[in-house]
Image (cartoon, rainbow, N blue to C red; front, top):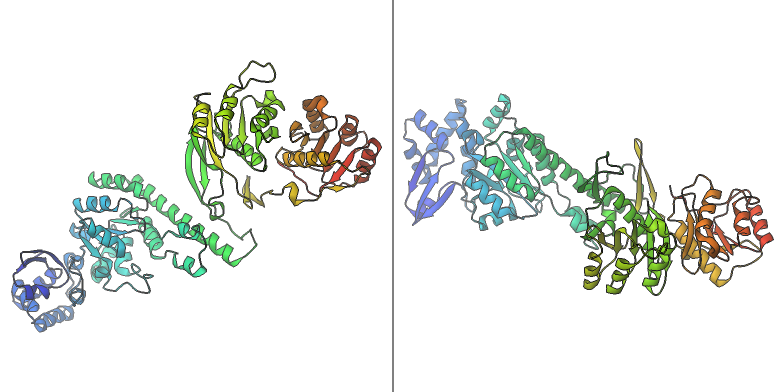
Length: 635
């Protein structure tokens, strides 16, 4: 492309958009309309230099005549002219106030172009300088352009390409054929390139875009509906989707962590389509996740109280690849839910691991069960879980005593289990966990897979780490209420509200002749809170805020009851029994068997066609019977 040296400052002020640098008052210009002038000069028998200088000094009539002559003769511009943009737009850019940055050139001429538009500007300077060193011309928007210029990167503003200003408070910046045509054009289709050539549009080789921080905005606190709407990105997703669709020719990047790989790929002048496909996949996934947040937010804004939308998208982000699934022959991974509804909701998914081996598939399930159970209790409580079932639960003012009682409930099951606390673990509790011997023989030091708590003192964490190199120590935030519970079945998903009811939310209605004592009622409520976390059919026997025995997962309620009594032993006399569902039979069945073993009070939902039999049976043995009206199936 021709170069022109203009020494006078007044003349330089008249230059068309494209002045690159100023050195002691002299301006070296790569004229964006050089090819046009060359064609004009040849046809009009002027030198291109003379024609250009004449235009600079005001002799625009000659230039206008020549350009009109070219148009009348239907002389097509060369690809170089198309890359340099048509003379008409170049003249428009030369108006007062227009930027003097160089016009972008089509990659068809060997000048590669990268479009960068970012909300998150992490590592932007590194990216910009890296691309510039590789010979890329950088096209950018607004704040991104300013940040690049501050980092020493030469930038062409998007409006210099579109010849149209940013408008509608920034809603329209890049939505223009001069941008999207250069992104979407297939380089292997001659008619695509011809169309670009005819309209003076250059191609883009790299598109780097991320989106308005909609998720962060709507989760940052109270936000007006109007403010939320204004934070929905339109141009960004359009650019990303366009570049991802045409990934064979355009590299699209949405994550700053991919900048090093991008630059390395470009330095190697590679043509690996797999790399391009992975970037394209990531781009579409990025937009899909973004749109799911917008959709979720809008549904909640427009459908108050309805938690089941006609369609549902759940954005999941890979947290880790696991060693295996439930069994060694199954591959597995752990994903974190990025739905707005679970933002800052606590739970095992966002727990901090301070120590131990990496978490396994079963570890996550068991830790989740233990944490959900212990989080139900207000008083200092310890829960021991094995295979997602709480086998020991105890609440005491002294959490050390609660720990000992929880293990004592079923020390055989507790060995190799998960221990959860709803209080901070200090040095004394940590030492008790580390040194405690099994109640079965008084010698075997208890072994656990995981300890989870809401916090640890510095010394407590130090002591607990000394128990085992493999012990996983988790710090979790209390699980939130009101979550939507999802569960997969073949070909579909089940969705339901989480079971958040506590004893304070329901009425324990006396249906027997004998009323329970205050201590019996308290025991019944404790047992009822435990039984909701045990797999059905489930029975829990408890006394003095301590689980004595539980029976879980049996196809019939009688077997679960017998397992619970076997674990509770003689302590079951005078204790409370809670059932997750009603008793279908009473006489010579579970209810009468419980009464004969000396149970003091029974809490069950009621609702059986034979409820009167249960009442009559309890009255015969002098047992208090409470109906809760609430079932707690857990499958």
